[in-house]
Length: 537
Image (cartoon, rainbow, N blue to C red):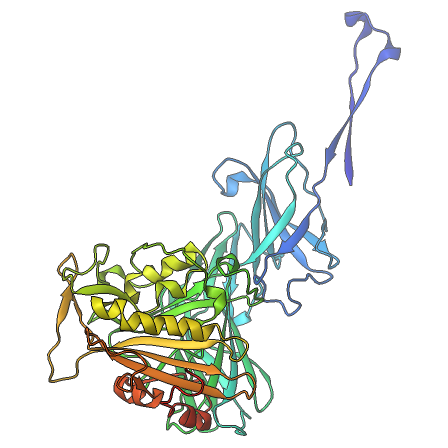
């Protein structure tokens, strides 16, 4: 649409000596702004994916550019714009126009529009399971700037999705109910500055949406993001069995978290498997003593080896369970695949883990005070060298143990190299799942300690171990193996009978259940293997 202003300049002929026949008519045009839109990848909770639907209405604010984004800066407020589903939005009641001359504006939009919204604070009630998309990418816009007027919408809320199956084949999930405890119900979003606030007093238990059949269910819930780990508890009930699992990591805004869960009815109170095949479960309770976990994800796909493209929207790097009392990791769990590997790119970027409080981590910028011990990686640097950015994450202090230097550079290094060899056997096997951890001295044997530069001590592990699992492509069967090696300069190679063991034995030594997503009957057989032949040669 065009808005025409007819400007007539009447000039008095007697004053200016002009004839009435020469009165000029000057027309100026003020152009209305048209909008296209994009819903950023993985940023929508809509059933229709990233497509708009016919009749969707967004609200748009125009603000003066370069001033504090408050009520005084608003020039147009909550104007409704509608789409036919093609992503182009048209004024439903009133257009927005480019400002005159050299003035510029900022444009902010949100979905779904509220008719009764007063001001610019958007109320959020999670119990209503709302859609909420937000766009603030259009800044410093003018009629002469030549900037695009494409609104890029991102999701502000978080979504969790659980795929649930029974651990025992043939068991029914009929009558399953599910909820999340500890969810903050109420919040408010400031449309002008993009900040989200939460009413912490509104924490409650919310039911999850459930779909699927008696053999598999999908559970989902939209949530406000969380600032800390272990704040949300998932409850599932099937018949007389009650299952509980604590989400071990914070939920960031705009992200979708997906978990695969098997319910084991053989446990008296039920048991959850963990979200990824390689992440162990603690046998005795919901969490190991004095532990904090960190889920390190691959944030951008360009970190990965381009020879192995993947369509996965969420790619995991590794998970660490850290013992805050003894100041060493219980374990680090990670998938191994050639897409994580390249040559070079070692960074030596020693740093605190950003997901674990610094005060419980050792300060290892300069290593341990004793030169006998290396800063031993549990996830090896060479296991994540597709790019330097990815490699940096292996130098977090939560990935380090005091490791005998001779062992680290000899027998242990040989095992790490063999694991990389196994992960490259992609024609015969699927992804290799690895858990690398440490075993501390058992009472009454005393602990020995390594000290950091701040005189804080970490327990020296007595043994280091690896548990491995992969699927054979030709048969679909799983195969596992484990290694336990003394943290000393023994010279005993990884493939010696004194080092090779079964995952079942490693479970009894550590108190963790490895690869808990394996179906129960299959797990019992697979975890008994202690032979390198034929799949681990």
